Length: 158
Image 1: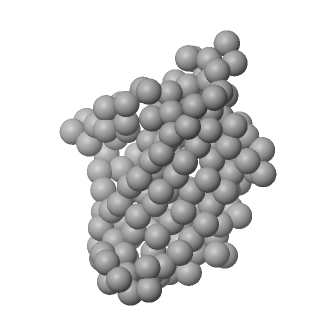
Image 2: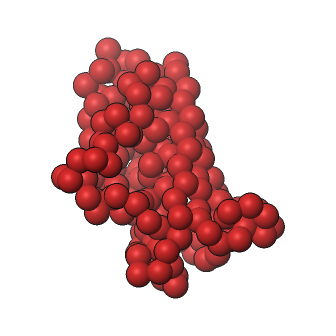
Image 3: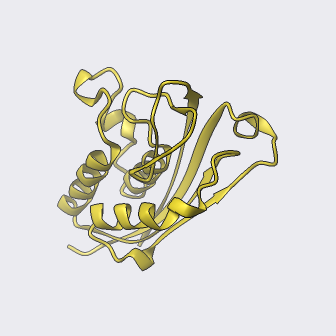
């Protein structure tokens, strides 16, 4: 058994879509990034890659590569799944938290869990997603950005 931790943060900007967990959420601002800037999926990918000692998303999907420009992060998550499977790893569970002052994320959490579970060929009961604010403190509290943290457990099956 191996554990991994992941973290990601992106700035909020006008004229960008807000995508979290593969769900487009109505909001006046979206996350700025080379890809779709889905901080939740990025944190999960880093946790999974870290648990397998395979580096991070920047190593595998660099923002200097034009083929990742505006790419859907769910497709990258599926690639991470394949990388782990090739090395003989099975994902046991994922726990994550999104840190955002606004918008309210509770109505979207179940769809995020479903999207991630489907992309990783997992049962939804093994995917936990929570959301919290920072009570108007820090960059997330000032609505300058959104961050996410994730931990995972994987096991070698081959």
